Image (cartoon, rainbow, N blue to C red; front, side, top):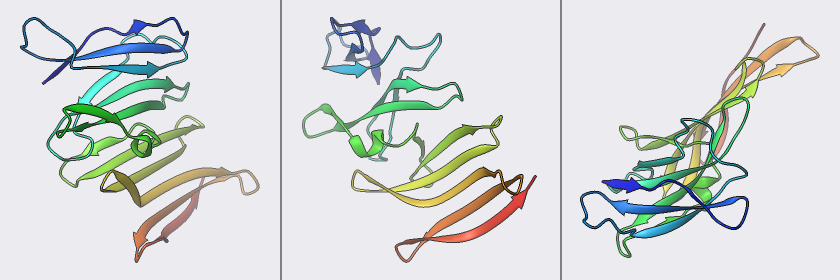
Length: 172
């Protein structure tokens, strides 16, 4: 199980340090120091540090909150635990996903993005991992069509290596 210390500001305005420690080790000493890049300190009660198995290998990985938006979208840097080195390694491909939530039953990463209009404009995506590379397997997007004055929902699924349209509907 992992513990973490509070974010420690560095001499750079948008860079913080986070000391990752193991629970129950006396005296507590960091096993690794991670740099967290943020434009400002996290908002009140933010879960800026999350330890969860992102890649379904049985080891806890780390998500560090780096940015957040007015619509509630959260952006994290993801660090995958490497059991060979005992260290957490930055994963750009997983960090590029918007707040990936692991679904351990399906071994998928689920991503939800709010785009506006009180949550009516959004996207939902599901990814499978090939190695450490997320592969899009399903997506649902809803957007506003200003010419038709209606919402357009599109659902696609990966079939034979290509994203294929499954459903398209318009509603007000």
